[in-house]
Length: 441
Image 1 (tube, rainbow, N blue to C red):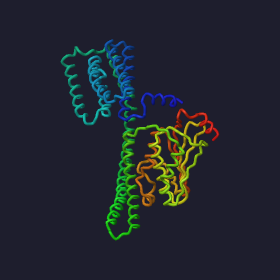
Image 2: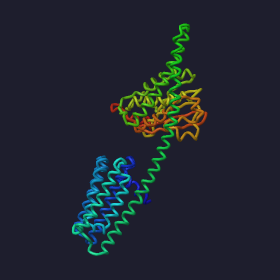
Image 3: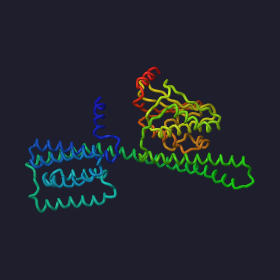
Image 4: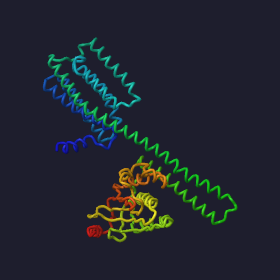
């Protein structure tokens, strides 16, 4: 119950959709704020020097400003630099205002240095470490030759209480931070290792996928030089060259699309799409490819709407269907490929689907089908060509449209890939008609 209340609040303060280093900076700043509030309250309660109370209060306000700049202005690099400089100045001030080497500032120095391991870039860490050591040395020298600059405590009890409460606060605050860092570094390490394995498998697979059509292109191009071949043979060779050229182009397009998606370089441009024409064009585009395998391509409109018009990015929608239909044809040896759409119960979303009567997907492979460079088991890799990027790209593009994608399948019975997006229709169309038809469904 308490976790259900605190977790959403925590996610509002420290969002999950930002880089690990930036989340760590936010966590450190928030802990700094809390530490500042506790320290200011302690200093005021025990009536320590008013300068110290004012100083810790100012630090708390400054940390709050840093959080606002990082969280809402997205200036994390600026905040990290400012945070590092401010810590030096603050700790030097605390040294003078809080008993020097006899107070808790040295403990804070050590704690901050430990946290700096995860904030300071590796290339700057040696330089920062030397500056840190020289700074502390300078403070000890200053305290030795000018002890009058150090503001002490009213009693030994005040000093011990101050050191105790700072030590406990730092201890309690660093435990979750260190746990968090350790957990995330292990997670990132596992991700990196898995990514390296996938990349190695991809490069091995890709070299084969590219080399095969290239060898065909070069081989049949050389055969065309033979003057003794007749026109029919020449046309056959040209068809083979064209087919393999299309395969090669599709592989290259997939890799480029994936790179664009990673770089978030694909803009969404909304167009008006007449779905009846869209699906008829799609059916026509793949009819020849399907006929070569004696497959039937069908279009099903389950929305009970004739000539439904929607607003969506037509090029992205077309690319999603291209990937899904290519997959369906590739893994289907007999039967049909069905393309279609329907509306949900309240008419808020439109659901598209590509259904085949192919080999299906095994339950052990299904959880991984949207991962990069995955194409099922080794038998499928040998039997069917492909880089294993079609479903990965389709998923990313569906999410780019604000939708979701899922699969229903059974081995040797076929596969249906569904994806849904928000239904947007042009303003000049009658919304009531759409919703009424959807409710009827």
